[in-house]
Length: 202
Image 1 (tube, one colour):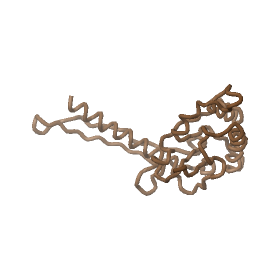
Image 2 (cartoon, one colour):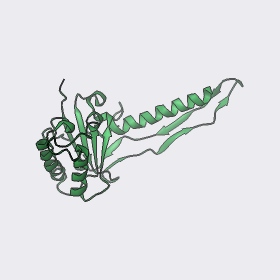
Image 3 (cartoon, rainbow, N blue to C red):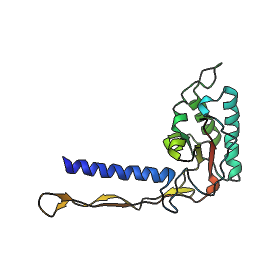
Image 4 (tube, rainbow, N blue to C red):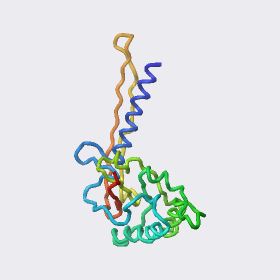
C-alpha cells in the first residue's frame, strides 16, 4: 500500500545517508567519512595502478611494501585489520596472481599476506564503491588500510532511524515523522589509517 511504500522509501533514504556519511562524509563542517579524513597525508607511491592489473613482480613488491608503510606510519604501535579497495579494482582480484603460475588469485595472495603478517585470521579485504574516483569526488582512486578499533576510528549513531506512529488529521491523509541522529567518522588515532591513492588514467 502507499503508506508502506512511502515508509520504505524514507528508510532507504536514511540508510543511504548513513552509508554516504560513513565513507565520504556529508556537506557539513566536521562530518568526515572513512575516506575523507583531514590531516592524513596519502601515500602515492605504493599503489600507482589497479592491484588487479599488477604483474606478478609488481604484486610481489606491493605485498612486501604495504604493511611496512602502515607500520612506519603508526610508529610500529598497531596492526591494520581492514583494507578497503575501490570496487572497480576489487572485482578484478579474482584474476590469477601470475600468468606463469596461475594457482592463486590476486585476492587469495593479498588475503594470505595480510592474515599471515598481522597474525589476524579475521583480517578483511573489502570492496568500497566510494573509493572509486567517480563516487569519491576527488578524481582519485583511494584505498584505506586501517585498524577497525573503536579507540582508533569510530562512527556513532546515537539515535537510530525512528518513525512515529502514522496518524491523520482529516481521516483521509496519513502523516508521520521520522528522525535519527548520526555522527561522521572520527579518526582518534589518525596514524592508524593510511590512504593509498593514484589518479586514474583517462
